[in-house]
Length: 256
Ligand code: MN3
Image 1: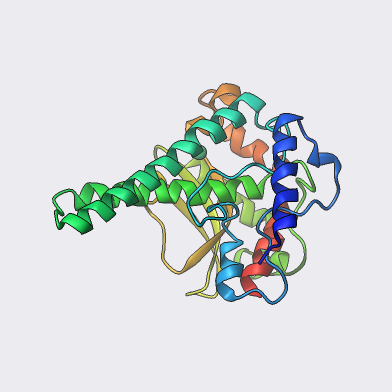
Image 2: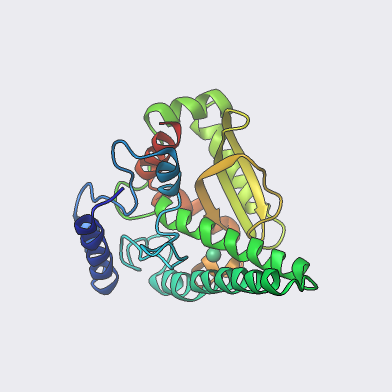
């Protein structure tokens, strides 16, 4: 779905961005990794909605960010971004790979004594990996803030009565997560409408038959250095770094 040259360009660009601050921020219309090409299959289009979740060998991998750690410092400081990406997200990738490998081993040996713990490990870390891939895609220095436009704005109007009531609902879900979790705006292809979920941890209190469009991480590791215990302050500032252009793109990819 993507030429090697384009992949290499994107990988090189992402590395440069991480090393040299908001390198790509100055490049208008930069193409993010894993955007589908014309004629891609449904599977390829869906894969594009969890950008960077797997590498070219098809293995789970930590994706490079398409911007520098300091790119969204108006809302989230660079140190938090770096720890969040390099440590927390990396741990979910490791946990997912370890959990799957242990399940393969259990299957080979026929010893399913640990099936409950291993299934939970894969669900937790797998949820964490996918939600973070989407989270990085939903924020950024380019085209940030504002309100959604086009077909997504129309759908938000249909399902929530407009952007303002949508955000009131979404922000309340984010602020009210019990313990650690996420607010998620998703397209329900089962229900043919947008839904807002208030997920706990990485994998609980969610639905089937949905694809997340916007994910807001409200684990303390996402905001603690700057906001301490003030999750509400973080959620209220978050709209300044939402990349609605990317979320509209995600919606278009999903709807074909
Ligand atoms: Mn997180």
